[in-house]
Amino acid sequence: MPKPLEMAERLRKLPPYLFAEIDKKKREARARGADLIDMGIGDPDLPTPPHVIEALKRGAENPASHRYPDYEGLLAFRAAVCDWYKRRFGVSLNPETEALTLIGSKEGTAHMPLAWVNPGDAVLVPDPGYPVYAAGTWFADGEVHFMPLRRQNGFLPDLDAVPADVARRAKLMYLNYPNNPTAAVASGEFFAKVVRFAREHDIIVCHDAMYSELRFEGYRPPSFLETPGAMEVGVEFHSLSKTYSMTGWRIGFCVGNAKYLAGLGKIKTNVDSGVFQAVQEAGIAALNGPQDIPEQYRKIYQERRDVVVAGLKALGWEVDVPKAAFFVWAPVPKGLDSRTFASRLLEEVGCVVTPGVGFGPSGEGFYRVALTIDAKRLAEAMERLKGLKL
Image (cartoon, rainbow, N blue to C red; front, side, top):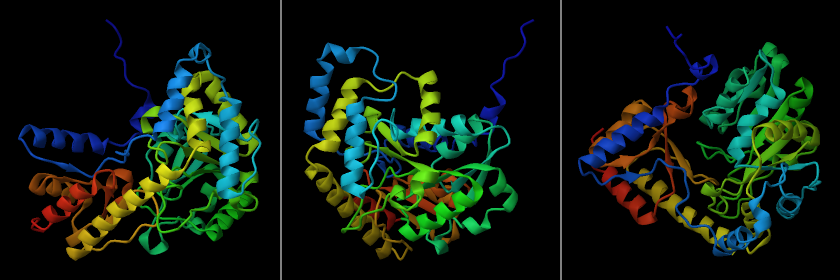
């Protein structure tokens, strides 16, 4: 008799996938003929700039692109990344050793613990936060220590609250500003505190800066690597997905400390074969080309933000005005839990939001609105919410 096969124990550590439950309810509602306004998906609806698409076409027509790409990524792409960092943040990087091409930043973020975390090592993970930070840690048999992000603290982790024994065992710390899901931002002063903490405890800082270019009203989020000493203690993950509406293209990069990048690169050379060369050439066009379209997109997202903020305030609901990212994160009204609130919005008024608990226990009591649909539909959603009887 064949022995029963079960999934690896590490997969059992993953929490239930709340979004599968939401997707099921959406399918059921649409089957009933409901017109849903889906504000739950953080995927840009705006198109990739035309000159980037043209660069892909040219690259795809070149037979040299059809073979395996360089494992570390085209040097020309990594040079474009470093040039962009210099222009944008004033940070100087060596493209040969301090930049690594990724198949989207999610892939590199998930693989980092495989390079640096041993069983029993701790990883400091923001809560609420992008689920990949914890998942990547569990896949490496590391121990996740969640750092609560509280509204009263500007959704920044309290590093002084990390237990001493956890700090001693910690190998990595994930941070993400501008933040998903809270849309909070971090200051240079906070990053300076992070550098001191990392030095004191020999921790690698992994800063996810994916949303740094979705910024409003002149605000310019800093890079962690701008902070004095940051290059000694960490790396920064970035992506072309949100800035240039290239989520489906799967291209990102990691920059920073050469030693830490070498570890990540060693994992990647053993598990993947790099990014299609034509996509990297399109990435060069995005980074080096005209930036007028991303600027137009920022204005569109800002208009959408203003529609949602004004709509929620008109209902008498609490909401903070985000300076960056394309999310609005707000407290659930009337003391409801976030799942119940999201379910009632979907079933009673046909509006989809993401319950905060889906991003971690400390996300309970909040919900997230993604600004990835047209302003007119967002305005319609705000009108529909007036019919919700809480």
